[in-house]
Amino acid sequence: MNQDQLRKMRSGAGFIAALDQSGGSTPGALAAYGIDASQYSGDAQMLGRMHEMRTRIMTSPSFGGDRILAAILFENTMDRQVEGRATTDYLWSVRQVVPFLKIDKGLAAEAAGVQLMKPIPGLSELLDRGAASGVLGTKMRSVIKLADPDGIAAIVGQQFEIGAQVLSSGLIPILEPEISISSPQKAAAEKLLRAAIEAHLAGLGPGRQVMLKLTLPEEDGFYGPLAAHPAVLRVVALSGGYSRAEACRRLARNHGIIASFSRALTEGLQVSQSDAEFNAQLDRAIAEIYAASVT
Image (cartoon, rainbow, N blue to C red; front, side, top):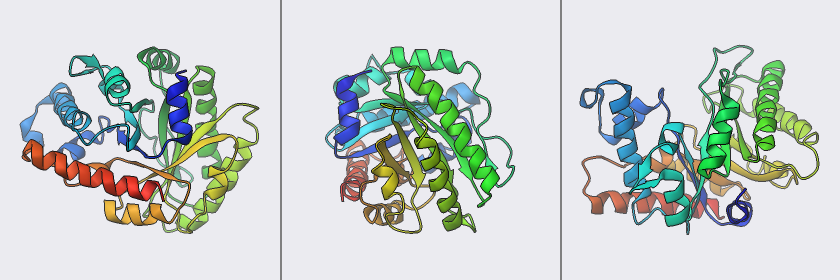
């Protein structure tokens, strides 16, 4: 494990850029960028266009380790290059941005008010490949839709079970049990989720730390106890479908938590923009998210 990267994640000022849209979410991300399905054919071309967009973001003068602590990558992005370097090497060696790897394979069908992760075949090999590539850690997402105690217990149990495997591989897991912002029971689900996470943190064992990626809560400061927990390296917030302005307003009211935004980061970026326009728009987004993350 790279100790410089670990120190940056533990105490650095800034936020995480989530650049990990995978097969299912890629068409929507490309459409928002101004590339519709008529402009590519098949998954290979689609992922190629997505990498072009990500490369434009990562090589922008605005994108650097002074404000961005880390970037979460889709496996396909990790396996590609940026300016002749492996993406992970480019991020850390050129931009001083810590690379993380998304490892989940999508969501299972809803049951008990939640969507667990689908099985992750070849996980051990993927973790070994990620470690060899230079990532500090991983990220995996599941979704809570209702305040069902059994469902939330299952989702947190699965996150920590896979998180333990990630820790054993020498990497830092980002556990992401997202609560849908459209849930009619969002506040109640948050109470169940925090209690379940605290119970599992108590059993992690000495010296083991995880990161948590959580939906911005209804009650300001609600996840403060998790951010202060000795078994938590960092709590980060997902934008979850909120606009960047709304996500940043909510984040600024939750001290000790930083952003890990995807759609809110790329909001307003267009393939048709000149490099000057693109870089200026990205710089405004990064500045806004950074300011909310350091309050």
